[in-house]
Image 1: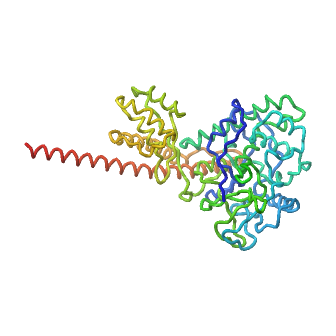
Image 2 (image 1 turned 60 degrees about the vertical axis):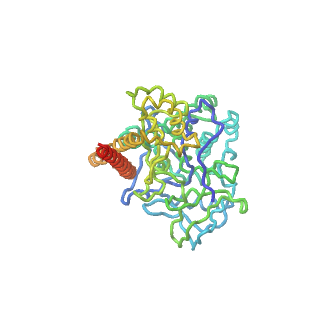
Length: 504
């Protein structure tokens, strides 16, 4: 099966805040964010009343959707889909693990079996017909890109309740998606202080809010009868973008169309599963092919893509158990030294190739990319190597085909030591957070908020534990390499001294 591709939304105007979102590495996927991926025993009861960032105004709670464990709404969805053309299924919606919903096998499923067969008529895309045709015409007249168009479409259809053909689907969507969009700035600063995911979450929240403001000023304020503020506001857009980030897929065999696929988005994620959604031209439906057999009553999984634990938390609101995600990585931030005599020259070389300082690079349990090593070479290189700055910056930006051969033996030890120092600085932040997390103030008057805070804290602890584990492994590898280099230098020095004494 083809993988759901990375988001590269086109048609975004240069001034739109969402323009930044298309440059983030976002794999589009399809799940109601199961709590089952969290540690057993943690149950979240999330309040929708908190604003996400401090500048956001108070907004009404979402009046549509359902609690994430509602089987009644899910059953109504299944019945409506069947009446609307969904063929008989070999899976059914049920509660899984800690009260969440998922698709479970209703009969024996073989490895390699095709499932779902959702027809295009039951798929929501930018081409879908608006129930409020006038609102749809206005949005298209302004040439709104796919993502904000779909976000507005969802709100418009949700507000129409039973007048919308998508009423049963929207009623089965979570009233509040599990997403970092719903974390307050204080919570991000408190719980994710050690992780680079914090910066990405803040940027995403800012871009979503900015996109709403852009639509409000350019379109909504000029057509208040079509887009009343009590319906189209920052709170409803936070909801709609939370749905899109967690459920939207790109179907390569459907001309790369971005789409919401009802029923398919009830599938939960498993790090060991390698099957993805795509449109099958022969059966004329959205399908996936099982990569393992399933017994009746067993939950059926799909992959959301090769994403790190931090990326899964960012879009879906869960963290896999430590050591279970083979795609896990941690972003390590490297920075030029401001006291470097060549600071400005190095910074210019980086900017020329689209890089900055600090710059983040992924570190996996198996090692780190050559781009990170090239950046480290640039940081530690002395003034007499200024002719190599351009080559190093180009290699760090992944814009050269010769980066794998990039080696500077004379500064390799310094580069590895610099990476090790950066690792250990990051490790100390994680260790401090994990040590202090047990004493964090959770004395909140509302029991509902207490559950929420405990849940967010547990997610942060799980993420910090998994990311620190990767850094510990990198620290071990770096120390061994440095030991080997230094022991080799010591042998060479002893050999040289022995020869000198011999000739004496």
